[in-house]
Structure formats: structure tokens, C-alpha cells
Image (tube, rainbow, N blue to C red; front, side, top):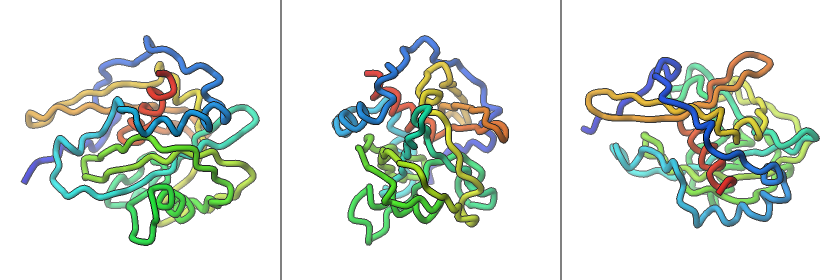
Length: 227
């Protein structure tokens, strides 16, 4: 059986550097009109971080989707994220987009993302406008994840499913798209070299350590917006 190195506490993995030298996303590209017009181009683009699934491949690929919800606020777009509950078998306590594995009744990736967002946090699909997809990201557990990018119009009421989600919260898109906040971590275990990104954000309730697949998909969004 192939060995998949697991990271139990990402905060202790050394930071190799940040990407403050990279360009900022022009402000107009962090607004709904530009994103609505240009996001359809993303599917034909090659992402910087495609995921580690191809490296370890211990399971058959499984289709999944996440919703990348960009909430339209007066002071700029906000990214809606969740903190997973501590008792889950996979990704316990991690910061994630709403999403999950595709089910047979889902007609496409967007349907999976909308269904999962409604189940996990009670987000009404009527408040969601799908504007595009990023290329897939393959996780170490062989989920082939389609990030579905959407604009979300307030007002809406969220109801987190306590069996999956501890809380839902918003982070300014401008913060996450600033490469100075992208930290690169590197580690090695039993001869296998790994790398991941983190984007720690200090919110009103404390630090939210955004890392792994969530940070990688956000980095891919940055790379698309700045190109």
C-alpha cells in the first residue's frame, strides 16, 4: 500500500517564505462585474496548484465540488468559509469551503456545490449566482474537486449543520488575494517531500488558520485573477 504523509498540526511545519514579491490583483478584478465577465475563461487555464492526488493515488478518483461563495458587501466581496466540527473523521476543525462528494442525483458540479452549501450552512440557492468554475483540484484522498465560483447576494440567514460545521464566517477577498498573506510551508517525511500554503486570518473571534486544499484553491483563484 502506498503511504500518504499526513499533517497533524500544520502550524508547526516550517514556513519557507511568503510571496510578498508577487503582484497585487488590480482592485477592479475583485468586484462582481469583472468576475462575472471573466470567470468563464478559467476552465481552459492551467492552475498553479493542481493538488497532490496524482502523487499518491492510493484510491480511485472520486468527484466532488466546493462552493467558493463571494458575498457581495458594501465594503467589498467577502469569502464565506466554514470551520469543520472537531469530531469528523476527515478534516476535523479545518477551514473549508462548503462542499462535498458528488451524489447520483447531482446533474453537474454546480448542483453538488449548491446542495452541499444548503445542507452544511443553510445557504439558499436562490441567493447564489454561479459565475464560473476553476480547474479541478485533486486531494491526497483522491477527491477530484471542482471549485464552483459564485456571487452571493444578501440578505440571507445561515443555519450551520452541527454534525459537520462549527461555524460559518467571512474573510475579505482582498485579504486572501494579497500574496503577501500567502505563506509557503515545506516538510519531508520518510523521504516524501510535501508543500502546502497557509493564509492565517485574524478575525473577531481569533485566528483562522486557512491552509491545505482551501488555501491552494484560493491561490489558484489569485493566479487566475492576476494573470
